[in-house]
Image (cartoon, one colour):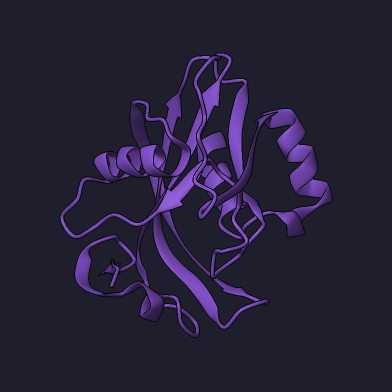
Length: 171
């Protein structure tokens, strides 16, 4: 059974609980991370569309990769490991900040309530991608300019945490 790290609104660890319990009803505040990977000198961002197998927010577009660190695990190390598992590559990452959000999935019986640490990285143009179909339906590279237009015109096609994480990135 997978567990997530519970925390307070400052990201201080307060315990652990099964992942399913943390996402039930209105959700329980727990640690997470969101990765943004760029290429082409930072001009293009890798987006993923979440797999239809995901319990929460399936088939929505979001940042490159998201997951949960384990107790005592460094967020950068956890994120690099997850990037490799989910998309078949890794790259140097650095933290740029954190935020707390809560969002109920209107199509399921659950929610996210996360202390989300945002990390960024860069890859070479020719980096091979090998998405895990259990996690990722599809991937694409997009310029920030194109992304901002899409977010404005079709916000319902993106995960609820994505705009706030992107805002941290752009400030």
